[in-house]
Image (tube, rainbow, N blue to C red; front, side, top):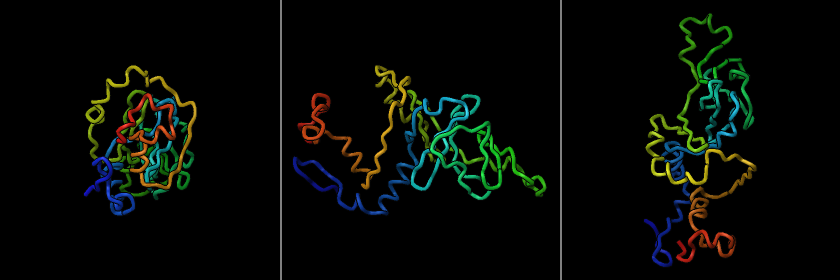
Length: 216
């Protein structure tokens, strides 16, 4: 049960921030089943360009194929499970090739080449495409969903569709990137960005923009 704190507000018990079983359940039910932001379309604007999205032990290749469509696949060869790419960004020259046994895939995921496997009885390339995940674009933002049966993106984001039109988000581009590696439970980071009670001390420039006086 949530613990009571000042002003009769509530906070989660300590175990929700340190218990590994709880974290594993959160990972499965939230991060592996919801639509997650992975980057901007400007990062993969060119045909063949890709970016990697890492989540726990999973790695996803998010790319733009030569027809201009977005694709997303697990970064794993179907032969021996070799990681296909290691660089966080790059460009594929028409196809994706595994560096181990040279299995080759179309950017849409189909297996197009497997050296000497035609000599193997009953082997069929159509049975070994890359494992793909759902991908969607909204206002220049790219999202993926690792669930085998994801809820439609349009349904989940329907409440937000008209709320950001004034900012012309679709035409924004990344000018600079800062990455923070924080040794903390993800909920602490989320909570920090969900309140501005700390703003008067740390971010006074935000005081006029964000309510902070009720400590919520």
